[in-house]
Length: 345
Image 1 (cartoon, helix red, strand yellow):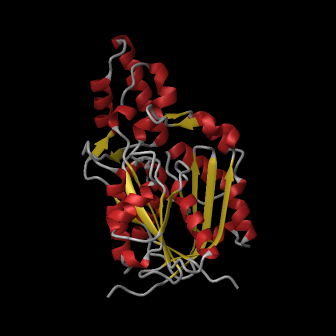
Image 2 (tube, one colour):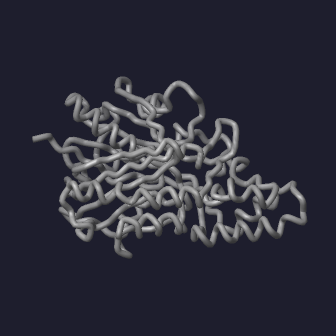
Image 3 (cartoon, helix red, strand yellow):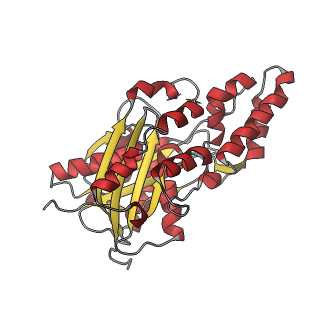
């Protein structure tokens, strides 16, 4: 029988500055250099985007010199301390963020160095908003293949720079760039361990991933450009991909109503509701925290998981499913049952 692996509860950090929808509109207005006659239409378009996504707030890092590895390492420390581990216990470090400050080396190397880890396997696992779950899946595969890996660390930080988000100079730009107005900043870290982590964790029972590369251009962020998302077209594509979640749950032999909670990526109310409807989820089976945090990219599932576990402490045997859908288009699903760990001293 394959030895079990466990996914810890995530650690989460968000900046203290919170921007409301009105704050975002004010920042767009300050950056606006287009035809003033178009401004009322731009403002109306923003209102429609906020209404469809049920956007309300997002946390934004105000430090212009903030670095992704620095933020990721800080939340990784939180995760280690929460679960009673030290950097010396970690043999695998995976950075999974969309954001990074350089093309090489792997950001995971800087994170590991900031944690004081001198020897470890490390790499970046990049898959847009699905990056963290893809990295968890990768860590599980590597730990299955190498029994010498005692614990893996998955972390990422999302710091969307303001010029990428708020520079809208005409109503025609809203269709491509308007989704960026709901982006929030955050960092998160998870541990994958061979025994239940302190405070409990998810015994991983199944993972699955699927990509639809013909739709790769529906959401892009160039190295020196702006975030672009064709949200309506992405929603149409996702409407035909409801089997990713149901397929894994079915193979595990779980009735869908036996799943306590599905912790999903949080791009906005419309897409969240559509995925939940397609999967046949009940009204209380998929927490939505987009209004509180915005779309935090690769940290989005961790954000939902952190909030859910804080509000609803799980019991042994509770079935939880994590699902992320990211640009590419790529989907990742991880399913497991909650197992209590040792209590904190």
